[in-house]
Length: 222
Image (cartoon, rainbow, N blue to C red; front, side, top):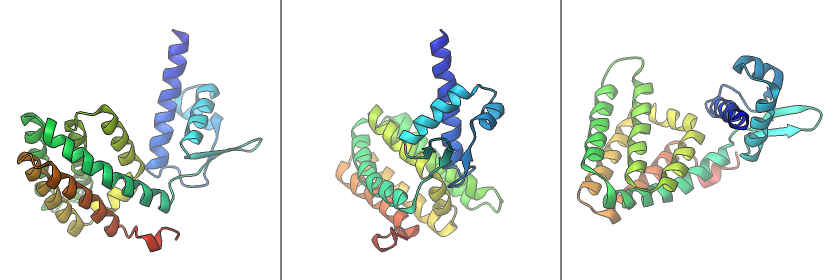
């Protein structure tokens, strides 16, 4: 029981730190102090230390012996690489969704698109945040519809890794409008059970996001 609690604490600390790094709460080169984090989260230094080691394995943290742990973060090249891989996997996911999607999931995707258009046309200060959240929900339902736990896990992780870049892209009204239209075209292809078209549209959708973020080959080393 004690071992389970230790793992649970480590997982909680890891999840919180990972989320804070990926969302920009911690910036690149920031030091992650075990004592400070432990006090903030109400845990001992042991689960914090273990979480930092796990984050180092993911490439988000660098641990320097006798100095401390520092945020590595996600580089521009990392984001470009993730989007390239995502473009292929999202296409495969859409193709699989045409074979396994349920009527309930189709209804959920239709609702997401209607809500996205509604919030995009609102003159509210929170519209960008709501549209970004709905964009994520569309992809989440699509991942579930693929009927593959592995696909869902991998793509969900990629979403977390590029959440700041996603917010920048979808937050722009012109790109948000185009993104919603691309989502609608993907959904229509899925409804028609046209796996080849759904794959091609989903693949292009991610490449369009890359272009909007200027993640071109020439700029990857910037």
